[in-house]
Amino acid sequence: MAGTLEAGRVGDLEKLGMVWSEQDASWADGIAVAKEYTAVHGHFLPPTTAVWDGHPNGVWAKNARAAARRAAANKELRAAGRPVPSAAGAMTDARRDEVDAIAPGWCPVWDTGWQRCLRLVQSHVQAGGSLPEAAGDVVVQGEDLGRWVTAQRYGWE
Image (cartoon, rainbow, N blue to C red; front, side, top):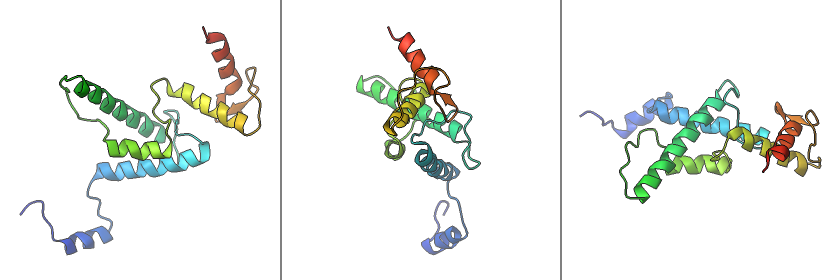
């Protein structure tokens, strides 16, 4: 019968490294990298170009955010009693919980670059630094925090 395999055979194949679902294996790899990246950087808001230990975690994070937002939009439609065009590509609650447990601010509704700079400024100040006041004062992880703070100050209305 198709789709069935006795437990002993399943165990034998798993001992050999059988991957039953490429999608699940890719997710597990992404989660492992997200944990490592967050432990080192203090956030999981990598730029899209970020690669960590050979894994394109910036693209993985971008795709995960898109899936989380798709799931949120579908929930809003259901709550309003409207039909959901497609659930394809929407993140499950279990997967959302998994990433939220690593870095709660990983999927902001605003630009991730803004959120990344906010986290970096917070970390800088919490580590005893002062709020950067000018471009070039503090550059962390390739982000000019002085320029960012200045832009926030002058861009505020």
